Length: 149
Image (cartoon, rainbow, N blue to C red; front, top):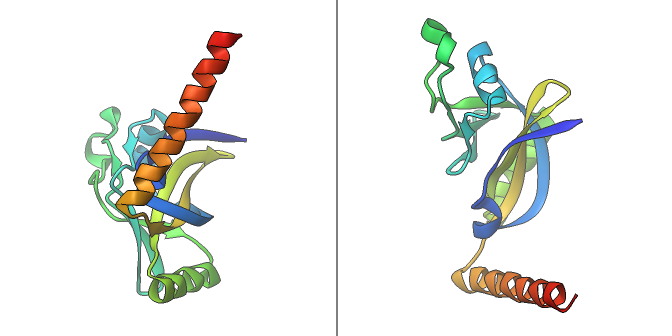
């Protein structure tokens, strides 16, 4: 059973997501408690591969109120738990295809915190406008259907 904690609202707007991966995150106890209460922001985050390890950068986990001395830095780099072959595959895709690794959502899966990573290609401005026009057209159709009964 999965319980969604936070989504990255700008990821699908700025990138065309080709495929997704699921990764665990190395967290401290107070960070898990803070995430359970929903105090996490992944809006401006990205994934980077350094020395054969994957890290999520820019993820803000608010300090836990009762955590006092055990709280960590809210914006620290957090290691992602992926298999070695997945990391090599992602690294190869980044170097060859010029794609980005973008966190899409963070959720609980069987009491473990998981991060969904998307392999995204950056959208151009006209692609974004096209997507907004499609959404607007669908919204108008739905509104017309609702009004006509």
